[in-house]
Length: 360
Image (tube, rainbow, N blue to C red):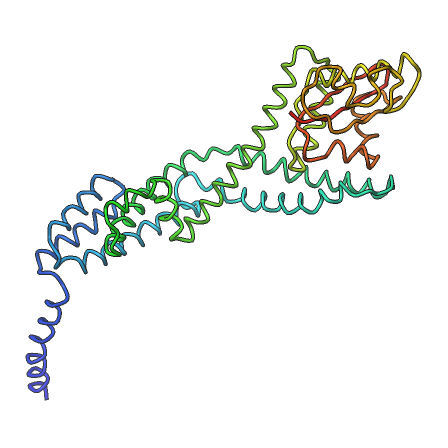
């Protein structure tokens, strides 16, 4: 019985060898490809490039093994990417929590903003609910802003290194699909990196996280820039600067553009407050010649943009009290939280407050 099994193995062995030889390169080529695979998995670009060059020198008989090696190398680098983004590597992943927090913030903004712009007929209970909604948004905004300040330098550098390897492998595999050198050169480096990352779930997740981070950082930077502009406006008074900081933050929490103080628009607002005190009236319509409407007053003050709305108040002892009064008045709240304006005029005279919004 054992003799018959031995004879069968002897008969089949040459057939198996011939089939393997027809599908694989010669042993020296196999050794070169195996060594090249090790170098393709390296984090050193020079080693990877040397691997690609060495296999190209082998000729057509090495193509099947080369293709398999490239696919294995891609899987290896995708695992490296997954480990990096999972936080298992050094430094953790500062992107992780940010995406979920910002997604929730965006969803809540989309839900709450229409409520802010609804006419509640000055129903205090309903507008109290709006303040509570804003407070919840504020918590999410503060958390997202804090997470956006995280240092991502280390993880970005690791991902960039891995992406370089994935781009190289993608380019090599594209040649098997018939892509010419000229066609490859027409694709920008940025697009090639995007395509290489999109081929893996973790790469796609990273790109989304990077976009979320960039957008949140831009939001924070826009608010910071507006505050710096307002704080360094030498012509502006403390109440004007303080009010601008308050309303800009309220708007930023809702995802709206913060306001920059505008000197001529503020002169128009200050003038109207002074006129109301001096002439003893309280109205958006002024009896002063040439200053009948807020648009007239803005034009007369030299404002060259587009005035969009005006709020007035009297008797409040602080800029924050004036803001609160306007928030509880539907039409005034809609003016303060409108999406279009980007500049603010603000003025106070003897507890008469005037706000004018506009666009430059």
